[in-house]
Image (cartoon, rainbow, N blue to C red):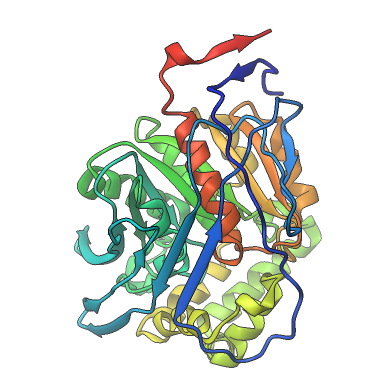
Length: 404
């Protein structure tokens, strides 16, 4: 169990006011502009490590232990990007911006060459601490389009397409023989190398879903790079082979082999890689289905139609080994903040709360009526949480006193 020692931070107070999401029927909608308006959180005296944020309108709620940042609220607009992909190169006209009465924040796209592969990433911001945003399974750096321009006003923000996803290269896993390529070791190494080669600095990792396992693995491999990790609905890896009954494991391995090595796998992928299927899946993982716009569907779908995407998809859904979050957390040396949408149908919040017992976990913040991807469904909650978490760990030691 983590220490109960409390930290008294500067008296700066930040306040949330939340919009109230309502469950709606999921239908086709076109939206190329996202507008977010919200003040930031007000800290309360420390009570315990599990906290709740309410989405109810006109309510003001608090987040213990997270403070140290002054804000007058923000207004963010993220416009759609037009991608033209040719031979793993990207020609992008992207004009994502934030506007709070100050100058616009431009979000740029670029290509990084890693081990001979082309890796797409986005970046914005010229000053402040570095943030690296890590997407989940089947997603890409566009899933952070509502966060990058807002956070870039006071941070250097990077969002990367993990190899095999988005507009990064998708090498065929069969090229590596019996050795698995699409593993958390591969992605964690990619993330650390990205910080060394591109960011050229230590960074905070902000991660969603399986991206959380990537961030934890990267922090374990090289503790000097990561200054802190924020986990948004981290994947519990409930399909991991260790979590299956012994008598079912042979059947699972046989089914994985069937998907990998027969036409059944390609048929399964083809049934998933359509606008209708992607929209249906997103409507399951978003509690507020009005956020499942046509823009979001296309940003998730289009990279999945690129050559090689089917092999990557099948390789990963058959990947039932590798590390579990509960195996990595005891090895992590940096501070960890866990944030969880409590309506996640895939990663139950009740199971996630057990992570509060690890020493590195500072807080567990629950977002009521939010699904699996809080950064996109409720950026008005997530962005200020990121800012507060980072600011807290940038406060000089002399300004922090211990309360006994």
